[in-house]
Image 1 (cartoon, rainbow, N blue to C red):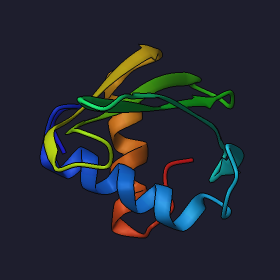
Image 2 (cartoon, helix red, strand yellow):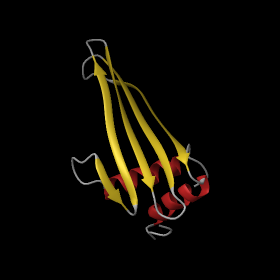
Image 3 (tube, helix red, strand yellow):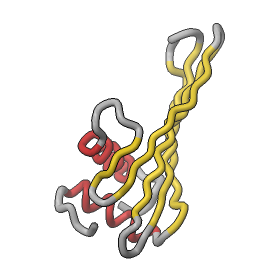
Image 4 (cartoon, one colour):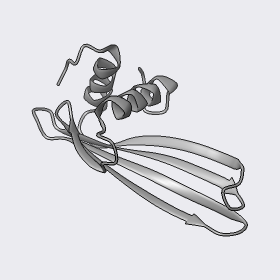
Length: 113
């Protein structure tokens, strides 16, 4: 895992999301990291879009925070998807430390924490 833009980061992120998020919860704790999810959406007859925003904060030694945004656009009411995008950006802390945490979660070792 080399960056916040690569496929491996987003696969690890999705894996953490699947394993750590309790059903129908927007705030939870997973492996020492506080997760906050919010969804923003709009829809009319012609198009719609939704953004899911995930804010993760680790307050232990070597604290960090990162934001991940997943974006969806579709045509018409409940129409076909015309675009999806996602991006991530560290907001505080050391980039390498954040990437190492996600890599450790992805490998199943659970280290470093």
